[in-house]
Amino acid sequence: RFLTEDIVDGGSEVPDSSYYAAEFARAGMDFLSLSRGGRFEDAKQPNVGEAAYPYTGRSGYECMPAYISDERGPFGRNVEPGAAIRKAVREAGFETPVIVTGGIHGFEKGERILQEGKADIVGIARQALADPDFFLKVRAGCGSEVRVCEYTNYCEGLDQKHKQVTCKLWDRKELDEPGVKRTLDGKRRTTAPAWAGPAA
Image (cartoon, rainbow, N blue to C red; front, side, top):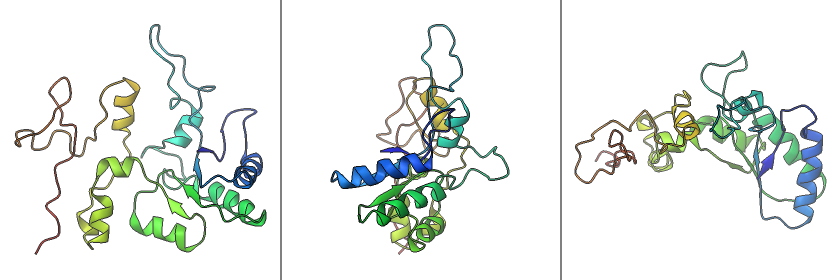
């Protein structure tokens, strides 16, 4: 995995990453996974005794955009840079699969990216945390049952504080369910409630 753009002064931009991608492909990499931003160089100064966290500056926002956003919105900000890099790899004569990530939370958006040839594989992270059964539900034709990520970055906030990462959409639901594993403080469940499967 590498970045389409560093989003910091003096950092790599799409032309640089296109060159890297072609060279990685030439070297025989099995796939190229593209993220964006999330650098330490522009991270906020941490409090004394705390570690620097790479998602607190502008580059961090580009890596993990939230629902409070600019006019572009938080979704798919890495798609076009990724598409440009994939194009460069193809023009260099390689068919190495390119994975794009970043604010892709819906089946329709992911499918459109693939159909338009902007990526070969679509990666999701926060949406997979919001609903670990996302793929099963979509495959079963139960898309309306998908628990959709709200991009509040609640999970990222927990990570920043070095706490067990969970999702606010499910971590306090059905806490009395038999066998539920809880976080160390006992206040949250560590896994989402199990999906019962498609209705008969």
